[in-house]
Length: 307
Length: 169
Image (cartoon, rainbow over all chains, first blue to last red; front, side, top):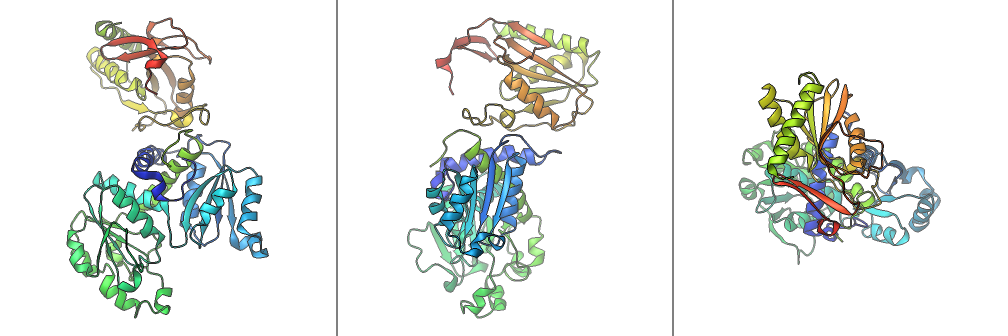
């Protein structure tokens, strides 16, 4: 595996390979000393053009647990503010001799460009509304951990699908692994066209919840209200929030998932987020292990997996 | 070696482990993934028959500790499973075939992350020579001279020597 840009690059076999390897790193992470020397001497740089604490920390933790060196390039403290182009920044970083670049950018497609400009392995940590492949992988792993397999599971993705790279990567990954995906959102928060998406669409959360094996909530961004896509956050919560009352419609083993950061009281009620079937902190823990697997596959395994 | 020879070798090694450690109170077995794991299970069965004691068994995959990461495809075969602290224990590493010694070196590194054993011993069914590191086994089923390009396969039915081409990976 040269780069990880899109879930589609991996293919079903590639996803399986990553999830299988993740098990090893879940074991490593559970040890008293959660560290292996596998990537000693390798350097991983995170190049984040968009604010992110959890994803960046997760990648850094993953790299450190593999004994790689990490460098951090964040926009606020960098030469980008002085007008440097992405290309010049990448060339500069690459000249320092790095083995992997983890990229996040607010524009779709930037990781593909970065991959053309460097010999280092490039990992897409989120590009615009487009993709967030490592999030999808950690979500698949978390579901598998609880349910054994995704095949035949009914997964509802609820919320602002239109602006969500998490939704796009997850729709691809979940359907590749055989799940039936239903998007639940107000029409204003769905993409203009869903042609080619392997999904069903519903505007009735109460009808979807009792049949769902997994309810995946997306973060509702406050800005959507000012953009006039929603009448009000309260109305959104009434119609599409996983409130305490709606929580009672869930089956006992229906998993509740959220990519974080959560807006408790908006898309998810505090009581629901703390249910035993809510695996939200498990997603975070598995995220480190999945990213260890990705880094090891790209920099350590010497294998050629997926695309 | 056929299945009967293997059984006798396992029984003898089990006796040697008991004798060497003056009992089994501190002994744990760690099988190296994947060939050493079934062998560790058989040794544990033999130890139970001799001493009436269940020794703890673990399974260790050394992929992340290998010194040839980046030089050839390296992927773990299975998940490590060591559910107990190794501090103060007499750890018997178990593998089917001892060859260059590099897997054992990686295993010694890995064990460090699970505690500080009182001692580490090495049990192998076949020692085929060609060591590249100063490592020697404490318990050996059989010394089997081989050419470097041959491969040795240990199964429940016995031991098989073939050529490299037969190797699946």
